[in-house]
Length: 149
Image (cartoon, rainbow, N blue to C red; front, side, top):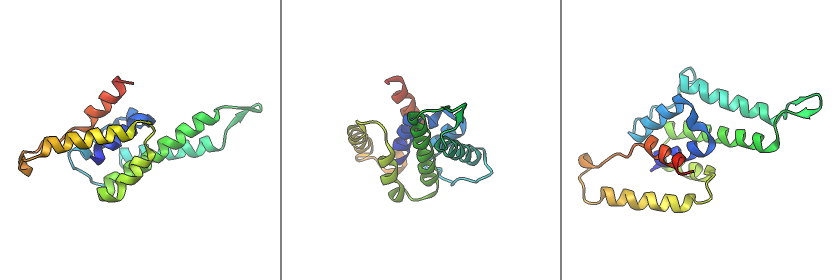
């Protein structure tokens, strides 16, 4: 469930445009959460997103004109928040992270989507022994979200 929500958040903030993030989301969907090494491609990408957001907050100007507007600055901040949530989702227990991920969601209908996903998860897992339960790939969910937007 956390991986699916993280995929939705990544799609909403544009974080899923980076191949390093897509790979991490795929691993998370298969319960391969190994944390984030600062020197890994994912670690470098996340640090770059944080730096870009920090630069956007300075509201850079050229000849007195803003180079970015406030909505662009906010978009970079939302992307950086999603990057932080992804780093946490890959490092911490799901119960410690899910609230933060849900809080970051940008889609106003996220609650209905979450309830639908819970219902699907219960239906898929009901009665099946643990070794036969299907693992939903989060990248497929993110692609579905983008195609319907």
